Length: 135
Image (cartoon, rainbow, N blue to C red):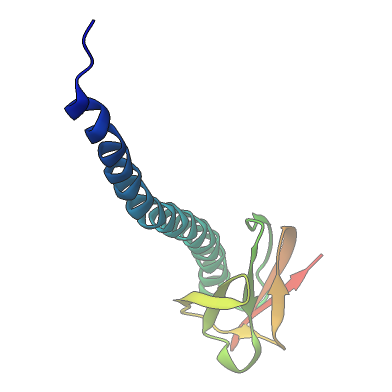
């Protein structure tokens, strides 16, 4: 069997070019996967915030004296902040960064409240807003 010198000499060059292409493609692929994961986390948090906003607005429209309870599951790695100076807003945090917010029709009364994990909330309607309390 005769050896082809051209094939033996060209093999290292082909391998080098192949590894160069692979090494240039790996970082963009890793960044794309990380961005997808961050987007999934943000969407899960936004979904929980929208669910809470619906309940707060529903309680606010029922009027003074109406009271209800709800179970809320907030995905790990994030939290929701309600009340305080921005009573008409649910602020959504993933890690330490605010990633989104949801506007409410009825303001949340009281100080800033941080919600994370699985919580049971009691909501009471008043003429001027909704009081949300974790129980």
